[in-house]
Length: 207
Length: 207
DNA sequence: GTCTATAGCTCGATAGAC
DNA sequence: GTCTATCGAGCTATAGAC
Image (cartoon, rainbow over all chains, first blue to last red; front, side, top):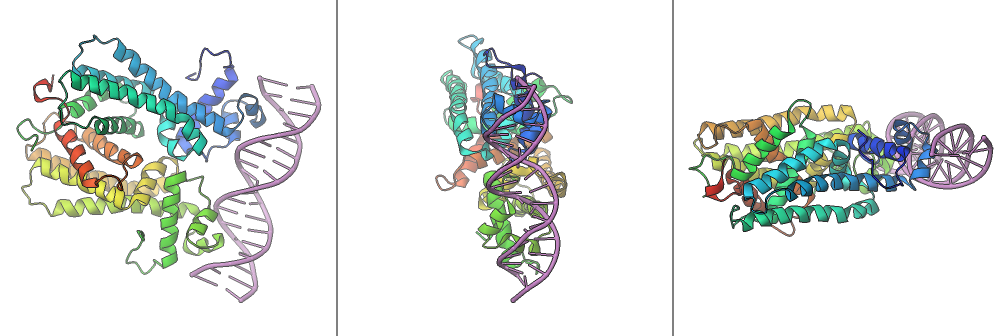
């Protein structure tokens, strides 16, 4: 679970353990309920030692928030890039859904922490996360407008609203889906089917 | 905004103000970050006075959580009950979506607080909210199985998964939709269209 | 029903030894 | 790079006056 490993020489082992511990605790208890002493203990350190690696609790949470989105962004953009240039709308969107969900559960502590605590961290930490958020939204806007340009998405669909519906419903799976009890691929298939084709029988559709 | 008013003689004006203040603060900052002093101040009281009305901070948050769900449950079940007994699948689901969203934003402080802080309140408060949560899930299961029994919902759809997708995507609108800048009815129409019929053009559907 | 005052605790952050 | 020790602040909850 050493999720926070990067190539930057900056990253000592303790630093990564602090981030991993903080992400898991923030996910479980929220931002304010987690003390620096608790983070330090979970990382195997005394509280004073944490300040060698980070300037403040706020600095830790900012990095946790950013890693949570960057992991998902990388996974989705990488897999979309491997698709043939003429991939159809369903393939594009399905690939995005499957890999968003895969990354969500593969880096669960960071991604869950992001979804759960973003609204309650100090303003500066929220602002420090805005850029990567917008970048990820932009990635999805590209995917969806490519799908619509292929002619596979109905012209009347509001793509921004669909993106919000889609990402909102995918992120909400963090609250109930247990990857130990079901395959993420199956979840992705089920969600993609509903989002792409709806739930109505084919006669009773659009009114 | 006196949302917490009930008919119970128990409800003094101060008690309702405490609940309203607590709901708004919990929504904005999370559970642990909100002090009893802050709740008291927002309700126009000193912190000691709060303990005349509630035994603890935990007791306050439990009531906020329950009110958040009960308001939505009441709105949805009442409006579903006014439909003709032979209402079709699209009407049933659309009515549920519209009224869930309406209640979400009409009682915004309580419903947002519930969605945001449920995962981080003390265990006993979470357990005190479980019964009303399950009841609301049951209401939706009834709506969806009625719709499927009418023949309007595809047989292959996993109704439990659809309910989680649907409620997850609706609740996520609390994070971005501003009822001052758009009509909730329009949002409901847009979401219902996508969830009922999907986004693909009619040729490129199910594979 | 609301007030003031405070006990007992935990918090984020710092200082300085090793 | 990690430790111990601690400062000052803020927290929940209680006690007792009015």
